[in-house]
Image (cartoon, rainbow over all chains, first blue to last red; front, side, top):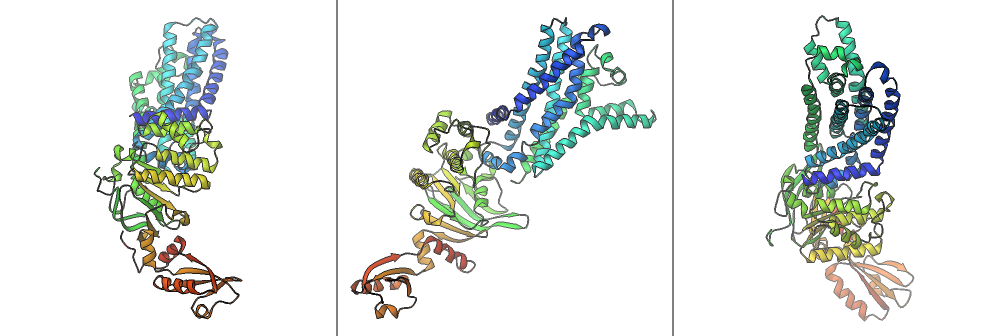
Length: 276
Length: 309
């Protein structure tokens, strides 16, 4: 375990040195601040608290951005070090392959967590400083949004690592990463919507729809934040979906966790069998 | 680990990658404290052998033990006691030399101070805070050596360790290796620069296309190869004496110097005669070089097998 933490520490250090941490933090902070102040302006008129609006808009942003950042960092984790020749030397040390993979995962999630917490936290702090009245419930929703965003990022780090452990060259890993992002973030929902419209309520049951939503970490995250949290459903336009679904926050959270653990375990299994 | 068992032991080890047989039927063992060179062309199987010894690859056939254990178990205690310098070693260029070496030291259970002392030992103390991306090839090689040497290894596997090192650093490396092997560390190094191995290793293992073609001390290999010694004679006049001219293989190498090959058993007779002849003013004796030995064993491979020292 100690070895895994050492690998994680090195990963974070490299992330700081390569400017990944600072770039991701700045990007998230800039977008979050923009959304916070643009979004807070009309809040008084629709009767929602400023922070609720921010939670809704930030979680929409997270769905696009965090998977992208996570995949960008993680797709290189195994295959990149293999190609540069640094992986062999590392594996000749007293460190198991699962420790290398687990350490890299921890380090990359830490990078994402720092970027998300400080980037989005800056937006929350700015709203508080600007004198918006936010109740404890609002802050709770905000904290939950940040926490689940990190979890979403972790799921895509795990997926990126799986891709990285499977392929023989970096280009392929990058291609898979882009493909995963397009599929999960853009195409999945559209395809689902198209199916629902085409089917016109004939064969697809609510249960099947729920399953389809759980099969995509981005959808699980969206439901958790936009529909699952009390009072936010109406704001986000997801109320309709939220009412029809039997998926409560515990199930959605479990789905997100499974999306972290299953790809990570698969990546470890693939990496353990890989011929060096 | 008991003192009398070999540090590295290979029994009929083979490794194939798909259709490629990287190593075939190789057996040898390295004693504790031994200094041995692994010699062969590119693709002869040197790097594969080292990977097998490190447990980074599993043999397709045969058995090997390193420090008394099967390396493919990946036992942490064994790995902590093995140092490896890969061929053309690379590091993440974003980190400094000190950060990288401290990381590797901690993985082997050593502290930061040991890493800093090692940086000093390989002459990188001044560059320790610089990013490795700015290092020259020789400096990266030295950092690679530092990580291999850290943690008092019982076995050192060095793949082409002297590439990129200047002559002074090379000498320094061989001094370090001599000290380590004196203290009981087994050193196996692969090399292309055969000439510089002379006097620095006790034994040479020659590989060709995955097969072991010779294994023995330099003297044994020389005796086995029966390569001719070459005598270089400086003459008093322009023409060599008749007895010399009638000997086979005489070759003029300068206006007043000739070279003549002679079989090892004829050497002393020839030397006595040359020493007595006033027409000859100087004698230089050239033993067959390691390069010639190497070429000889590669030519003869398939038929004859080396001695078993």
